Figure 1 (cartoon, helix red, strand yellow):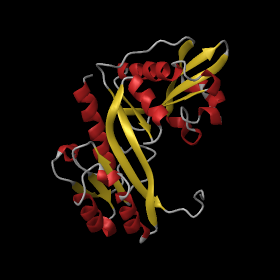
Figure 2 (cartoon, helix red, strand yellow; figure 1 turned 45 degrees about the vertical axis):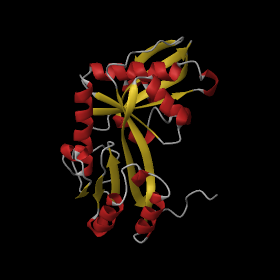
Figure 3 (cartoon, one colour; figure 1 turned 90 degrees about the vertical axis):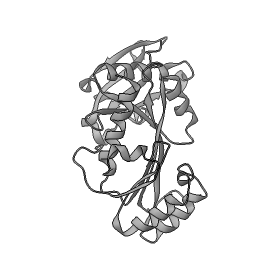
Figure 4 (spheres, one colour; figure 1 turned 180 degrees about the vertical axis):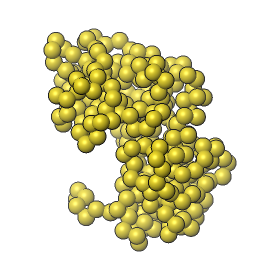
Length: 254
């Protein structure tokens, strides 16, 4: 699989999720479409979106509810792609969303593998692939990035690092859609800074690619440690996404 094929696969999936065409992400102008439910969308997405922005760098594709279409169009067309995902501009978007009981709730950067750089990195501990049947004991808080308790059926493959019989690091794959699996990773605190995360992430990603599936990786803007792991493991920034949801009164106070 080439880097071009990896990117096209991601754009095809983003097009399904957003309700647009893959070519819309490479247009010189911004694109606004009306969001709708889609059978092949990533399984954890709550569709239709009220407001969702995606950028692969050159423009912004907005997938929206009809009632906010005109305002979102004005928002993205008055700004560069990067400004649409930054403060203070997001404050303006939140003002528009607040009138509908919504606010920006999710913001993340997504990474795709660079097949020319990706290789399974060494680990000082024993590593091995784990099947879904072997994952049952590990649905505990310390492995919450690698595995998802609420969507166990999507956890299709994992790679663990073991110190003797003890699991000390775990990278897991969630089959979020038919062509792409998302990788998450956890390492016990006392075992960090030994290259375990990158060894597990790169090793699992290489195995996923070998199976003809595109692995992808996601982290928040401020999660520097996770972003560094992505880069060390052979992943590169690919797209940014912002999603609005219902404003919750129980959000953490200052």
